[in-house]
Length: 154
Image (tube, rainbow, N blue to C red; front, side, top):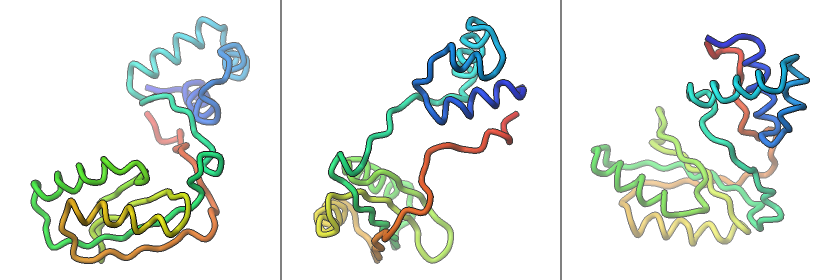
């Protein structure tokens, strides 16, 4: 069961996973060793799935975002696994979700420029049969992040 200090630690770590242990301990009113033990317990319990570095997309040369909405006529486990493998081999595809509604999947693609979308599109359709693909170019990022709310965790 999480308490408010655990939630505060999780929120702070989401903001900056490289924060100094002494800074974290001070901000949640714990000793250094108690803070370290709590973080270790949160990792062991699976609340902290992994620690990553978020790269600057502009500096990495992939400032453009395209969202591709995909329809398929196939819904078997075998087809889904082929699709999963096909998209996992394409580094420009950074996120993919199976959906309810009019489309079956949405994929988030990061690119050096919009013209590069065709390269990624061809990589997908060479590996897996699709019924329809509709792509939209992101014009502006209004909100972006990886942090999740910590208030719901028990």
